[in-house]
Length: 310
Image (cartoon, rainbow, N blue to C red; front, side, top):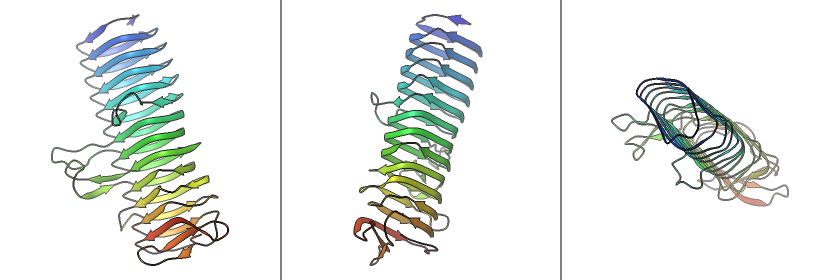
């Protein structure tokens, strides 16, 4: 099927293919599955509801004020041209999310960004993600957490971004600076308002710097590599499960001005400063700069310290 500007497209069953040269003010309802939904130009004020699975949603141009709602699983959601106020809500899983350009949801309230209940295999935004909430959380009928994780998360830069999962983040890589980030992989019962009952960890975290941001996990952080920007004051890195919440490596050529809390064991924390100074309970170490002057950064460990703290 091919069409130009249309106010409403209503399909009671499956839709194999829908292609447009660009879209302005279109509402689409599909009562079954969608093979491909493609716009070859700028897309504005589009609402798409799919009652089953979606194979491909692709826009070759900018996107604004657009909502995509899928009751099943999705294969690929891609925008080649940047996106503003782009809300995606998928009840199942999503294999690939790709924006070539920036993603900015400042026009909407936090929480109205990307929500995929079952998890995302690959999430990539080549430039800046700003004012957005990426969530892979879900609950069963009793309020128990059953959401998914994120296999690979890649972005050019982050500014005021929340990432919340109920399972592991395999790789989290940001080429530039990270400002105002909040990662939380902890899962609570009673629809998020009860006790901590599970969650995930992070395999690899890499960024140029962590500024005024928090990284909180239930399980282990295997590797955290921060560039010369280091970890600023008012930033926190924490793991919260005593049995699995270990920190294998945190390394930066910069300094740590924030707080590090580890419920499990720590192997190595290596900074651009001198050896950290032992401190009084509950704080184990004070981080210092290259002149051995305390930065204000602290380390608290519930388990064992197995390697070097500097």
